Length: 77
Image 1 (cartoon, rainbow, N blue to C red):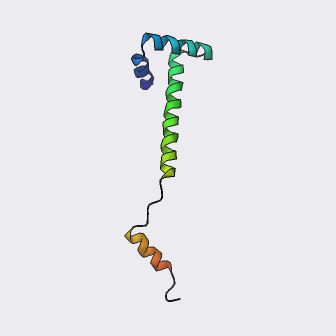
Image 2 (cartoon, rainbow, N blue to C red):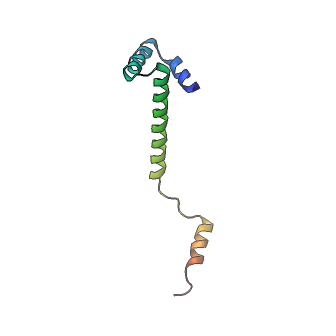
Image 3 (cartoon, rainbow, N blue to C red):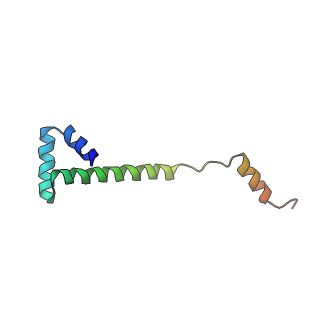
């Protein structure tokens, strides 16, 4: 759990005390609480990235894609 330790080191004393109170209220240790918050943050970022990817319009077919489409169409009629 290295990410949690780096977050814990970057917290100021006031932030650490606040997070410790929230962890105690949830019945967790501070390390477990910070790990949970980090997992939630990563899941949220992943969901946002997935939503952005889904919102992109599909790419138009390339050269070979267009050739394959034309090859599937019947001739002449």
